[in-house]
Length: 251
Image (cartoon, rainbow, N blue to C red; front, side):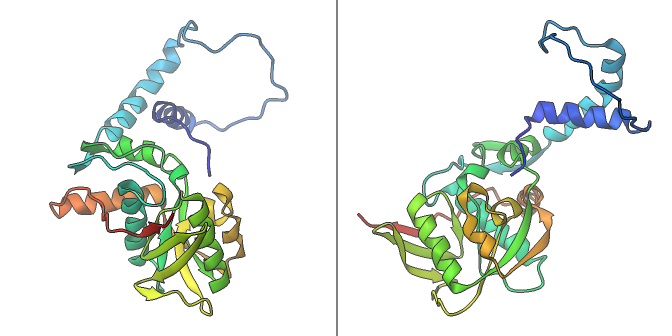
């Protein structure tokens, strides 16, 4: 997972990059060390500020763009939640429209969803705060034994929402697994769409490194979220989540 950069800082870095892109970068033979702390007490350079302002204004205007409306806030919770369900469902839907083969299910983790989707107007900046990482969607082909291992881990930790599948948590293990409404078959392979970060074992999901095949979908996760919300808005639909029960937790 790439490092989180706050929206304002990200906009400033973009502006600096754009402002300097017309001259070649030359490496310095050495870097000087100073004990000057970076703080608000240091006045901004007026010449640099003059160059940055137009780009900062462009970034700010883009982040303030309203892309959709949520009649209720979508937040996170263990196992399943309005926010988790919304994101994994759209991951599956948007990926299926781009990927050439079938995709059985989708998953992400609560750790990758940084903020809830608030009640009311949803801005581009909100989605950057929700998904600040430059993660790409990938499709994994997994053996049945690997899928069982993933579900058992999901049952144990409770932080991996899942689309197009249901299961029961019993004794810390996943039982009664169904994928696409059909009973899980450990003898067959399944496909799962997730982020490239998780596919590489991030968030302790090393099980995904056992994938038989990893294929790029061709879209960033953040872009898939924005694309889906824009589609909902174009159809006159609000941002909402399927809250049908997916995980049953037994005592």
